[in-house]
Image (tube, rainbow, N blue to C red; front, side):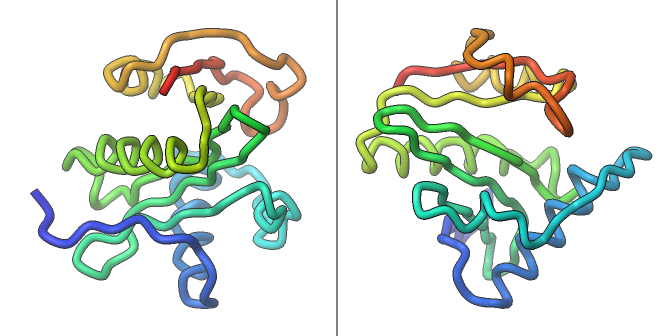
Length: 150
């Protein structure tokens, strides 16, 4: 189990660099995928959307963004660095995001889960539940929509 784990809002330039590096490597170029990645995507800077960096012992190891829509939160672009996968950090990231969402008054979380990680989300209490077909495009084209009450 890691000693010093923290979830921090991405603000500093070095944090943005780590955030984009992990996201690009794990979600856009890993496993033969070659999707375009935009480090300046406007959705990362919308006030209702909060990008997070998971750090373990001061090292950036994971990322996610929490988008708030009134009392609904949408978890987006979740990734753990390949060298740190299989160590329980995805579960830790999920638990920390749940806490952040509850503090923000969010009652339900939603996610567009890649088909290869549906089982992971199910183990964390998520259930398949279609919530917006218009979301299923681009990198999320083949995703399974899931949600979880908090």
